[in-house]
Length: 428
Image (tube, rainbow, N blue to C red; front, side, top):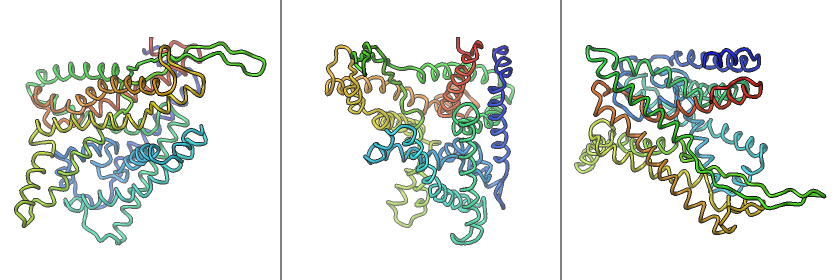
């Protein structure tokens, strides 16, 4: 391993990419510590205590939200814009046609995503500013005051800056830039999360089970994340000009977890949003409104009624995995593409039978991926129940899933770079 890293640094272009990526990540971590003006640190700490929704948002902001920095929104608006564009491709035919136009179509969709990020950043920045002012973190100001507008411009500029830094990593460094920024934020919070586990006289009794669980979970994430069903596709002989090309066999890879971490994001947002809204009605003068608000805020906040919250969380993750996979993979379009290019699955007739076969296979493998993502989502509550001293642990399965995915994809890219220069790679 060490020899492989040294070999990578001997190649000038690989060394340049590694150092460039490291430099961008250092800039990102420096920006995380640049706070917005007039922040009440004590109120900020109380706000993030036992608030799962803000914990999820803080993960995707790279830790900037918990520090109330100018990049407090992180890449959340960009991620939301990307999700919206992917969903809109399934309902707007012009966007679907544009996505099929190769590099030109991808560039246009990326441009639309960047433009959509700006209004989303303004809207989310205003929501965060209202939340911070309501909890005494920052002074309350009018919507059209200079202070509020400057704060919104700071949040929006921070998001655009992070988006630009992420694209620089994707172009000149290694790996996906946006994923790397989220990865850096999660890694930066690991010492703070692990610290309470290592303190106290009974630290070894907590540390050893925690390490065992962490190793098993990481191995399972790698195994499931890389798992795929390879469907053989046979292409008929074709004549082009004066040449005849013999039929060849290729494979259609169907990943077990096509949806990635998106179902977890959807589920936690849907589940915690009613609890957040209900807190504003707990002091209502209407009895049934106040009772309903108290029940929702106490049972769906992720801290009190863990069995009910965990069950709903698991069910929603499974549901959204199937929902988002339906947008990611379209059996009808894949079957039509194979038919137009002279491809067929051995033993399956082209057209409608191929579409039905791909649908059945996708549903079966998605079941395993959905159950695994549901387990990853509720993993922190399982760990808290069986390992004492981990009550405030926010480093959950979503964070582990993101970190492992980023590391694996970066290793693959570095492996390809190494193999091009006849060096021995990481993966053996």
